[in-house]
Image (tube, rainbow, N blue to C red):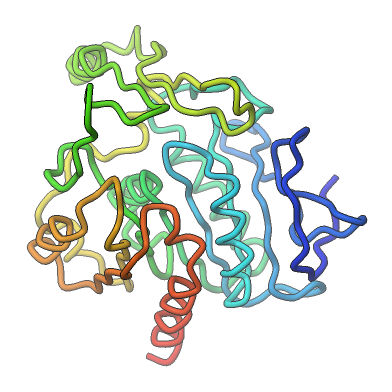
Length: 304
């Protein structure tokens, strides 16, 4: 059962549930579920600005290659001062379903569309989508099908596509600590997938830290990873989107070179691009500067 969401700034990390949760019987968000296209129940956290009523708008935050529970909790706590916030845990990441895999390529598109429909049914008149890191790639997939599925789009510390020449190269063997990508296997399965050969798409091709068990790792399947990206990003992709867009990255981002991304962005679109000084890939989510930026951006949209 979802718990009542009460206003408080007291919160703790629960080592048993691997979640932020209760302290002295008080919670600051509610755990909810929505029904996906295949009737599966999928989880999200709902941060409300007001205890007993909804705001007109809601911000839906899509996480990156990991579930980012702690960082996105901090972000949700700050952003709810602007409007209600929904943070879904994507299928394959949460504890309630087969982990590290999804039924087929494209599952995330349909899951997020189902979430959008149910938020509209709740009465939200405006839905703003926020992607963090690889979550930005999920938004590009949705935009490739429907450029009007939201009322505005936010890309934070964006990882749009692995083919872009904007990323910093990790030292050593080319793998960031705690992460492993089986590149040869990925290329082979991608080649087969282009010929509609999906027999081996369930094969695990990546390993990431497991946020629900710090002593373990989580292996991700090929079809899970490929379901997060568009095949390619056409040069006019962003310019064809009429709804407001903003991209923001920290100057100290350790994944993406902010100057290279800015040059690429200017070739793609005239939409707003902001570099926040002294912020890195995840600290961007905890920074008040980020929330102030989004609050000003939303006010500009509402007044236009």
